[in-house]
Length: 449
Ligand SMILES: Cc1ncc(COP(=O)(O)O)c(C=O)c1O
Image (cartoon, rainbow, N blue to C red; front, side, top):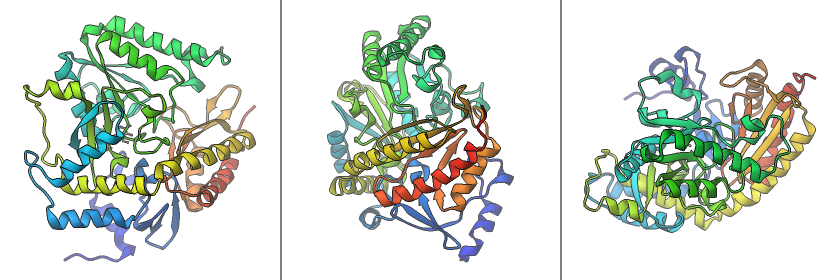
């Protein structure tokens, strides 16, 4: 039996583990030994405030005994059966999800994570419509498997081209701060802004041919690529365009679901019912791996007499399903979504203050506890503090400063993401914002003009 001291975790991990998204010789992971609530601790006992919910997924916070106990109980009772059999957690979770998903999204295909959910959503959409192409947006991330990577619009896709899944066409995101169509028209109304982006999409549909397009997939609120919140009317417009052209609307809520935005799902803010919602992360708050494809009645019924050609050994894994049930119960019992809404207002106030105080803050964006601080060299030109798909000494220093001062979050190029567990309170939020406030002095010093 290999047992090691906490002090050996880092070195031994570096010797034997292969790391995601990294040059292997350059990683320096924090060896984590415990986590509770909104905090985690490293092997030296240093405490970090988790402002990224780890990978934007520990929605109910760390170490909730109710979820841990549910996992242990399920492991004792029945840890696994083949996907063609069924279990109590499978019966219960489907019903619970049908109650919280919008409209008639009443049928769920379970996977192990977000990428697999998107892969299967595409299969379902293609089989159901008999069409092939998928439209997706440039500022998006949909997962690292081949199909999900082809949907992904951001530069993570580029390393794997040209061998990805065929038939994906990308279009532009309604990203107001860096709008391609409105560089010289910052005062344009929200309605006109929305309209221009819907027209852009319709033009692409006409060139590609509606008869060839199975689905449009979007992150309802874009996550890693900078918390891009759809303008008023955009989602409703998308729904109409899809209906008109017999195209399915798939909303990827892997990151934005499960209370992150202050509603169960981000689409609930606009009362739009997509044909398919994909989910993962907050579905179990990452206590166990799980993703799901939610589909409307009509889509599920199509497969009543047609085979769905897809499967996974760990489909509907009882331990993961038990974690999801307990996680949703915690969210309901503790009013976690109400807290996200309430603390979202507090966070917004803090972000606005940071925006007023720091000349390197170009824009702050937030919805619930899903937020971003976009850092610029020059407010006038909006030159980002780090280039698109790049880093800069200033942003690297901000990240180091935050970690040195016990705040863990995600920095994406020139954007600081603030995505804490939804159970965070005012004091803890202030603790994090204070350190970010100090860190922004670093980028303020680099402002030009
Ligand atoms: C919006 C979105 N979709 C899909 C994924 C992929 O999920 P997973 O890493 O569980 O495969 C992610 C992961 O960050 C995501 O943010």
